[in-house]
Image 1 (cartoon, rainbow, N blue to C red):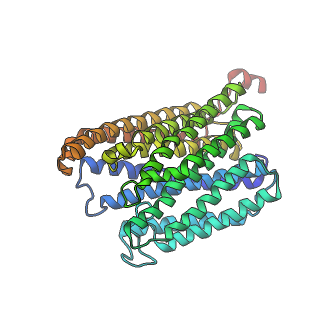
Image 2 (cartoon, rainbow, N blue to C red):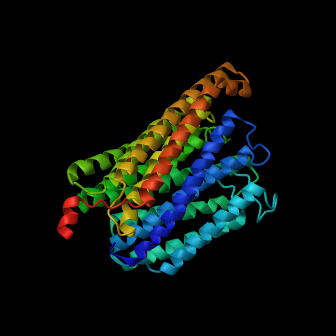
Image 3 (tube, rainbow, N blue to C red):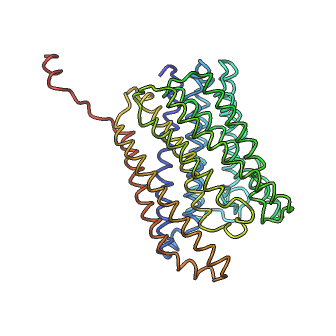
Length: 454
């Protein structure tokens, strides 16, 4: 570790990993409710479980991004973070907001209160006071990292990362705008939900992945930066107007069906470019880097993002197909693999690379770390296939044949059992990852070395 302020990242990574565990447990509980619907129905209703699952996902991914920025920016800018105190203040604000959200959701506090009560918009259910806290934390963060970069060396990686982080913060402001007209509400709601995950988050993903490739493969910076600009241009070109695939059936003008279909088809390009980039960098580098686990997570990130966000997104993004498939389990299949591939794997890659450095140790328990990758990834891929099959059957029975929703749900229960089984495998992978990353490997001293020392 070259810079003392990089230690800030360790605190962010720790909180992120705790929330990661909460998110997976929430998802497993939600999966169980699908097969045993009355579980905790009065104590903890399904809608609250789902809110905890999705909100903790978003928050821990953001904490991972913030931690990654605090780790890599000092190295890229060749100077310490502008203010470590502000960085820790930002984390405290985010933790207090997270605890406030959990208590508000679970105990249904301040129901109906415009400032303290939860809101009814999916993914943006946070009370207004928490949203204001997020904005304050984001402003502190942006000031801190921007000042660091402006006073230090500028690189393509920090430029793209800052562009993504600024975009993330500015787009979140649309979370405060909630018009009475439902069509208008949905139009602006997607400004946050879509333009985050298929816009500015892709810039953050590309810059962190580029940093990892630079460190793990030893390829020249110039080569990495050329790839980075191409990927980012493709992501912005396709992603911004690709928002149109959410405007098909919400009351927007008909031309969105063509705009959405055309540009959404192109959204697969940046993900393919990112996968090609990762593998080409490893091939060009031919470097035997000691941290094999971080390299595996990086390659897994690029590959599973291509299939989850790219291929599975394309499967139901054309308006002629989406007319039948939207809102079915096909959407859930795409959502799970896309988030896991693009952002979960990315955070776990930077954790696997940075945490041994931050804790001043060699990468430890790498075999267990890599085993956790295969457990988590195989579980998530199997879950994606089961949900895809469930969604295909659901689409035909419900949207084509016209059977009742609950009758269809009863018919596809077998897929929900399989999905729950896949969730258990993912949880085992998460526990193994946490053990591999947090528990130091016991030092093994050979007999020869002991004799020599004596």
